[in-house]
Amino acid sequence: MSITISRVKGMKLKAEVDGFTIITGKIDETTPAEGPSPGKLMVASLGLCIEVYAALYLRKHKIPDEGLTVEIKETNGQNPSRAIAFDVEVKVKAVLTDEQKSGIMKNILHCYVSNTMKGNPEINYSLLVDS
Image: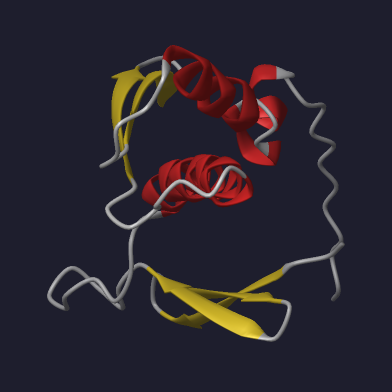
């Protein structure tokens, strides 16, 4: 899979993913942001992924999923600037047995995003100069 990131203008950027366009940043300091920061998009991706796996469990077990939400609080660190912790709260508006609660928690562990983050992925950088 390949995702292309390009500059629209100033610090306003776009990512093209599977036919969708995601906008982040702003043109300059005087203009409003036109989308969340890359860091917030990362946290949103984590929450979206967890919600998908929670919803899959609920639907499979015919438990109502209306009102299902995920809230994430992040803790940031310095040197280098990064997120150092995520507190994830999955909220379900349903009466659940202990087995169902356990099942939801086990199912969200299949989240691609959280598994990638926990796995300390290798990131390879290259610079191509076209003069």
